[in-house]
Length: 112
Image (cartoon, rainbow, N blue to C red; front, side):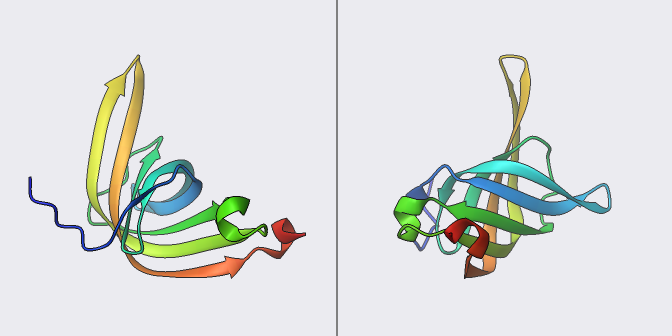
C-alpha cells in the first residue's frame, strides 16, 4: 500500500464528541481518537456515520500536551473511510476523516 499522508500522525487516544448526520439528522456521539494530525484523524465511535458526510468534532487536549490548562480543539471535516467489525460480541466502528479546518480554544471552565 502506498502511503498518501503528507503530515505526521500522532498516536493519541483522546475523548471526542462528533456530530455527524445519521439518518438525515446530526446526532452527537462520543468516541476516542486513535491517531491525529493537522489534516486528518482516525477515531472509534459506537455508531457508523455515512462516508463522504461532513462532521463537527471537539476534543480536549490532555494537560501534558496543553501546557497545564484546558484546551479544546474544534474541527470541521469530511468522513473519507468507514470500517465496521465485530469483536467479542460487540460492534465497532472506525472512521478515517480529513480535517478541513480547526481552531484551538482555551476552555476557561477546565483551565481554572
